[in-house]
Length: 390
Image (tube, rainbow, N blue to C red):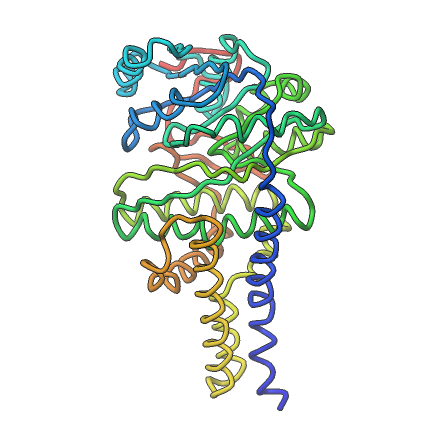
C-alpha cells in the first residue's frame, strides 16, 4: 500500500500548485476589474536595437493611446541602426504625437539596453517614466490601465503581464505557452503569497521620485535582469509595486528552436543568480520531474502510471483554463499537444542553468555573476562612466 501511495506523493506538489494558481488568478482578475480615472502625464522610453517583427505597428500602437498627455522617447546607440528609418517614418505618420529620437553611443555598463535608458532619461518630460520593450504592442487603453495605479501615492512602480497570441512556428509556440502555462501562473502565485517584489521587463512604469531614490537607471547597468532588479530595488526602497491586469502583447518573429532555448537558458541562469533559493525550490512545481520520480518510485507499476496520467490531465486542464479564461491568447487547445515537450524542455533548462554561468544576449557572450551582475566576455566593452564604445 505504501508503494502504491508513493507516486502520488511525488505528484502532489505540482498538482496542488496548478489548482492554487487557478485560484490566485481568479482572485487577481476579479479584484482588478474595478476601473479608475487617474491619468498623470507619462513619458515612454523605448530602448531599441535593430528591427523586430512588425516594428512599425508595435511602435504605432503607443501613438494611438486613448490618453491625455504622453511623450515617447526612442533611444538607439547608433545612427545606422535599422530601427532609425522606422522611427523617422513613425514621426511623419503621427505629427501630433510628442515623439523624440535620441541617438547616443555612450556605454555605462555591460547592459547596453540600460545605457540607452540612461542616455534617453534627460529627455523625459514627465514624472511617470514607462520603459517598454521594442517588440511590445499594446491596445489603446494601455496607459489608462497602467496609470490608474499611481492614484495610490505609495505605489512606486507598475508592471504588466504579457502574452504572445500569434506564433510563427513550433519554436515560438513553445516559448509562448511558457508565458501562459508557467510565467503568468508563477507571477500570480507569488503576488498572492508574498506580494510583488520584482518587475516584468515587457512594461515597467516607475515614478521619477522612486527611480531617483534608488540611484536612477545607472544602478542597473551591470545587471542582465534589469527588470527584476528595478522592481526589487524600488520595493526595497519602501515603495509598493502594482501589477496591471491589462495584457501587453509580445510580437514574436520566426525563430529556431536553438535561439529560443538559448534565451530560455539566459533567463534561467539570470534568475538562478538573482533569486537562488526560490529558483532552486521551483523544481517542486514542475510536472516533468514529478512524473519521472513517480514512475521510478513505483517501479513503473500501474499506480505510477495512474499518478502520471492524473498529473498530466491536471496540467493540460490548468494550462487550458489559463489560456482560454485568463490570458485569452488562443495558444490552447491548438498547441496543447506540445505542452509535455515544453515541460520536459523547461526541466532540462532548469538543470542546465546550474551547469554553467555563460549566457548569450544579442550575439554577445556574458558571464552571470552571483547576485545577477554580468561581465561581458564576448566582445569589446569600454567600461563605466560614459566612455564611448568603438
